[in-house]
Length: 195
Image (spheres, rainbow, N blue to C red):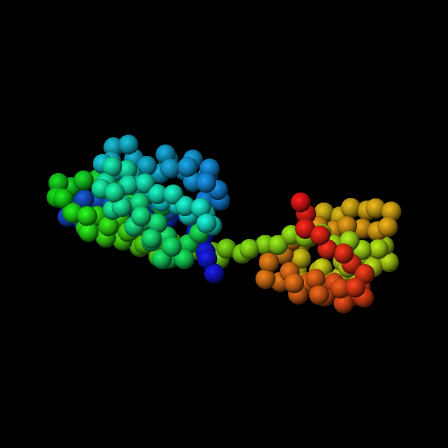
């Protein structure tokens, strides 16, 4: 199961007089990741390289370092630590000694990986939302089954034939809850996905 950061994290690494400062923050969208880049970057530094992953979306930048020596290793560190919804910026202050392509890959990837390894994480839980409709006589039974199944009621609407409830719960428990609701009401409920 993927995880994200519970709080921002930092890690400082010195390699041959160059300083690499990794800053990692949780982000929930590509826009949030892009907006967080400037505050985490240092204009006085030689390079501010970064990568982020949000589900299947990802981006990275070498910020002037040789192609593939910074952004990709940072992204590989994010993936290697099983993180999602994370932005990592590794800022480098050049110390006068060239590190070579391999040295840069190890320094950028290593700073990012250690930062994420030390960070406090929380699991990412996928949620499912659906609507369940029932007749008025089944409403009490439906409420009891939803509470027992740990579902969160987001909305409740009433129509001439009965009620429609929009609920949310961890996706891995959705099928079990639907079975419970069918059993509790003798299959008199209808399910739809909100759209």
